[in-house]
Length: 501
Image (cartoon, rainbow, N blue to C red):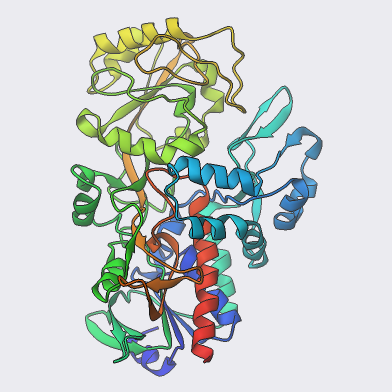
């Protein structure tokens, strides 16, 4: 929509943002009778925010395969006799949320996230989003059978691209209008403090749009190096960004300027091991494939040639979002992931893309000379000590926390500790890639934005990465898409109810 078309549209609800959370909010609002306008700062070809870059992990509670069939009817076509989906109960989900966040997750928001996750997965599926089992991604084949681990049974088929296609299609059937290249600049308030619209600038022209409610679902500040340095700390301005270049913190700043309450872990973010030669921002032709998540099956070394974390502390889905930040702390802000040939078949497709920074060697001495920036002598000593410390009497099993550990090292590896003794050897050069920031706005149980005095800002709602309080220093894979869908739906329903009155 252009400026003249927007002037004539007269929406009752305006949604700022056009990714997963925003589209869920827009669809829910439209289903409840609202006339919805979506504002996207990006051009059409870059639409969708960070959702466009996601691999599609989708975390929700389930009590067994019958719950999974509600979300994925095609599950009947799988060889269910040889797939152990196990359970991921609400209790297990709560345990993960509280454990991973050091018990700092907002209890009210966390309860909504966990208890509404299954019904929201069903709702998402009803919008044309297809899900499939994460075989080979969250379940490895051992002794002829797949066993799921980490609480992630289903993934969105086709990742973020297909998720957005389905949601945009549903939005279109609901007659939801979308204005591209239309970044929001400030919120409009009535004399009584109620938010009554938002100003946008489209191709240089400013327009104030009146509406009964405004819903912010435009991400955090991960694309803004100035804000990363300010809130995350020294060095974070130099980190690469996994996703969109458009999440500059504008929505957060607009809300804070009118007295919204900041909430959550403003000095924390979701960050991962990311190819050292990836571009500064996400590339839609590659998506999330610059990530390198299979480090539990090898070792990681820094420029000194030393290991610096326990690679096997837990499944990657429980550590990957904080271990990216550990790379930033290393000299030169890089690391190398090293594997031997025994585990190559376990490495995901992201390790085999064309644009990957890797070296291979037939001896460890040869490999040491190829690890750019690494002290080769110390590296070889590290590998020798690691190999000697591995408990080879414990069976290796990638589907469980197998307890195959090292003993006697300064930093022991807790699980999946295999000696690096089978050539050829493979190493991947990685740095820190920021996904999204954890600090955001405080919202109520119906996704209304609270003010700094403990009340609410009437007419203002928020969903997605802009909501603070759920995550602290760490994150469980697949929770972001789920929280965006849940709070997007809640915000859309609440905004539509407000404008009816």
